[in-house]
Image (cartoon, rainbow, N blue to C red):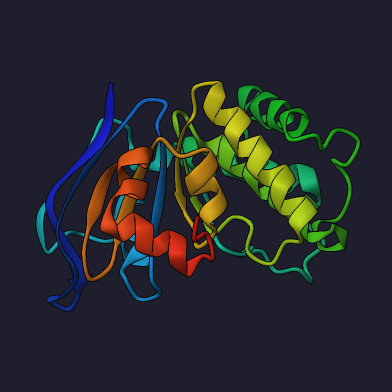
Length: 233
C-alpha cells in the first residue's frame, strides 16, 4: 500500500522555491534514505512531510495522518537542564493521541512501556534524561517517536554526534524496526544506511534521483556520492 506520493512537488519559503518538480512515492515497509548536499532542501522536505509546510506547487498525498508519523529530530528539543525522566519523555510521544483529553490513557501508558522495552531501556524508566549518554538519549527519543508512530518513522540525521558504537547500535535498531514492517524515512549524510539498509534513495541537489538503491549507486549521482564518501571501489 502506498503511504504517500509526491507529484511535481515544489517547496520553499515566501514564494521562493528551494525544491522544484520533485516526484517520489513510499510504500509500506520501504526504507527510504534522503541524501544530498547541505542546502539541497532535505530539511524543507522534512517539514512538508510533517505537515508544517504547504507546497508552493504540486501535491503531497498522504494515506496516513501527519500526526501519526513518528519523528526523531537531529538533536533533542528537550531542555537538558529540566529534570525529565525517561518514562515521561517516551510517554510524550502520545501527545498527538490525546484528542482533547487532559490525561494519558492506560493504552497510551502501555504503548510507551512497550517501546521502552523495545528499545532496551527497561530499568531506566526513572533515570533523568539529562544524565544519559548520547546513544541512550537517542534510544529514548526513538522510543518516543515509536509511541507516536503508526506505520512511519521519519529520522533526521539520527546518529549525528554519536560515537561509532552507539551509531551502529542505533542503525541496527532501525533496521530491525523496518524488518518488522515499520516504514523508514531517513535523512542522512552517512553513506552506510544508504548502502546497507535502504530499499530506495531520494537524492536532492543540482540533479534529482529517485529509485531503487542498486539503481542509484549505478547512476552518475550515486557514483559521485560514493566517491565523495571515500568509497572509490
